[in-house]
Length: 283
Image 1 (cartoon, rainbow, N blue to C red):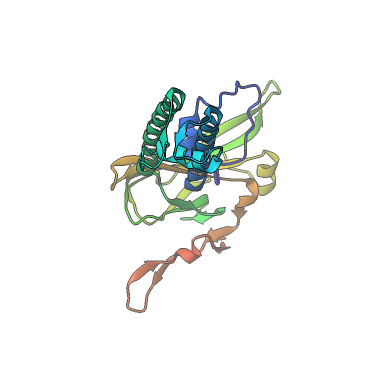
Image 2 (image 1 turned 135 degrees about the horizontal axis):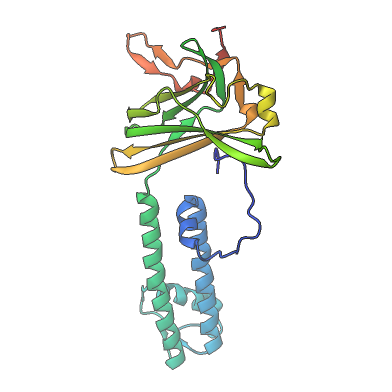
């Protein structure tokens, strides 16, 4: 997933592909979902068409041995269309039609439920800055990341969370991966409609105090930001997450100002400069 951090491989877990198939179908892209539905739909009709051909003379008005007629008869049966041109003949053909009609009804119900669930699943369209920066903010060296709400709606009771993951060595000499919560100047917002500059002051109490670009790379640091809130349109919780590697943390840089004044005096946000940075002149 983009912005979710590095890929972690799981070794030794029991594989159960069908156990999480519902979750996988909900999280897959629309293109992948409809491609899978098409493949399953065509595959099922091909399978039933072969069954009708195996029966022999099981379809009235069908050309003997015609796979095309058997396939399209299967399509009509699975979709419960029934044009009346072709019909099953004999007990075995009727039993196969009964089974296919059941498969078609169940398949339609499942696909309808999945499509509705995917449409109704709340998602946040939040963009994060490509880089995090370390610059002076209100006279204090600070770590800054920027995020924006791409939708026109508001996210109420928004909360931002910033954590630092780094490799550390315990007094016993064991190397561990520790998570440090970074204190923010403002971690909550009554509403999140446009942009939000997330600021972590690098004070002596900060896990980043005394760190350098080289030490962050040596400690294999990951910086992860998350945002949660309530979508006012859907009245449901939404969340977003992004991660930065050490080479994406820029020192001595600050974000370019995205707030501009138009010729008519109105204020606007220029999202074309959202990811832009410039040298920090704060000393």
